[in-house]
Structure formats: C-alpha cells, structure tokens
Length: 225
Image 1: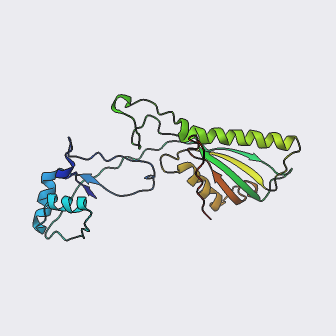
Image 2: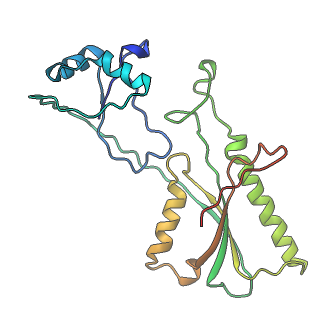
Image 3: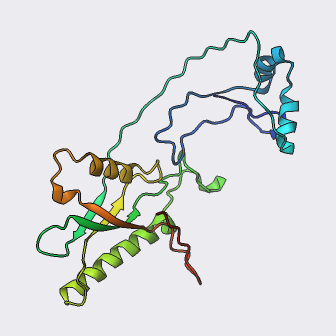
C-alpha cells in the first residue's frame, strides 16, 4: 500500500504518518508513504495525474483501478513487533456449590489510550504526551461492572437472588489495541486444551458495558443475536 497526501490536502508535511490504531492488531499490510512529486512519476506511464484523480475522488466520482505499464517498485520495510503482557481480571459468581456448565458474562474493558500515542486521541496540541484517564471510556463501564458484581453478591448472600447460571464478571485488557484481551479469552474458551471444563462453560449471554458514563435521559443499546 502506497499512501500519498495529494495536492488538494494542503498539508504541511507531505509524508503521511503511518501509525497503528485501535483494531489493527491483526492487520498485516505493508505500507509506505511518498511525496506528491514521486507519486506523479509513478502515475505518468499510465497518463494519469495525481491532481485529476484527487479531484475526482473529492467530487465523489467512482474511480476504477488502472494498470501502470512497465512499472516496477521495490521497498525495504522493517516491522518491529512489540510484545507486552496484559491481564484480564475475572470473577465468578456461582449459582450453586459446584460450577455450572452454563454462564452469563458481564464485561467491560479496563484499558484506555494511555498517553495517546498511536491511538485515536482527541488531545489538543498543548495536551500531547499527557495521560488520558478515560473517565467514560471505559472507567464508567468498569465502575458499573464492579457495582453490579457487589450488588448481586450481596443479594445472593441475603437470599434475595438465586441465579440459574453462573455469572462471570470480566474486565478485559487491551481493548483499545484491537480487543486483545477478550479475543484471547474467546480463543482459549474455544480451544479448551488442558483448561478444566469448569473454567470453560457454555456462554448463554454476554452483556458488554462501554462508555456508559454519558447517560442523561437515555442509554444506547446494541444487540447481536
């Protein structure tokens, strides 16, 4: 993939920063960024102009792909893979004295953007490099998760609540980097392996809470069957 800003963008720096963002953890696409003059040289054998193509795209015209005759392009691209350790935090409220083979999961992700490096940060220039606390995304969801767990445990102890299924409270790690924590859990759940059957029960339903701190008069619910 070759990225070019184009003359219509009127950018201060033609080379487009290529940064990893949320949801790109599983992506595997090689990319480079080039200046407008170099892009014009690449398009010349096809009789195309970068400005004409960008004008058409800006108008919303359909621009079909085209062949550039006789063009060979080579590039050396290094990928630096970083490995970090994240931890999901799980708590299980059992319906009985023994683990059930069915469970309901209530979850929320516990990470945020950190210092906003490489993410979709909305920080202003004077806020660059400062910590993003994530009060709504997603401390609000984690607070609701903890409150729900405390309430249901208390109700069960008082004899006012008797669940039919076990309830798993899950605080996921690495959501902003591409749902890494929850994806790991799902894969481990499906793989089974040496994991005891009591730790990988059938999931009846899952409730996820993300960015619920903006509740005023209504709350947005999204469902997937």
